Length: 109
Length: 115
Image (tube, rainbow over all chains, first blue to last red; front, side, top):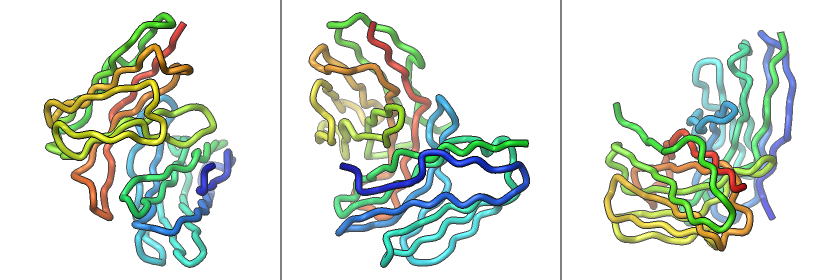
């Protein structure tokens, strides 16, 4: 079974802030990725964290706590175009990506 | 423009037929991957290749085959042995294996429907 977990769906309002959580369990860890995927399209890279702490990139920030097996993606000043699925994935000891099922984010006006 | 192309975007096949999905990249990446995406599930790795003329099975390789005769190309064949082939197939590439920061770049995907 999967050892990476994220909520299936979240809803937020345009202009607001939303935090998407991701938890994982692994003995070997080489970093955690966040990707954005619009319906029917390819995932696109958002962020990579390998050290604990917060990485900020414009409206999007990603946080990692390796000791807790926990990451979150923070989206600020939400826009309608942010409606998409957000995929987290950790890189294991074999440098393979293990993917979560994705969180579908619905933005309402 | 560098990138990854997959064709076709939509593909319909009759049950029992083999079908080949193409994937081409001009990013000069060594590593290439095939994933399958089903509703409510994460991306699942079918096959990957770190170098020309070499490839390894992923988690769900049964019923699939690949080749890597050229660095730029990594076609996937969905054989009649694959019991549930209808899915969204994504091809990806990255600079190489064994790197901690190894962003994967994805193609637009092929949606295969077996009738």
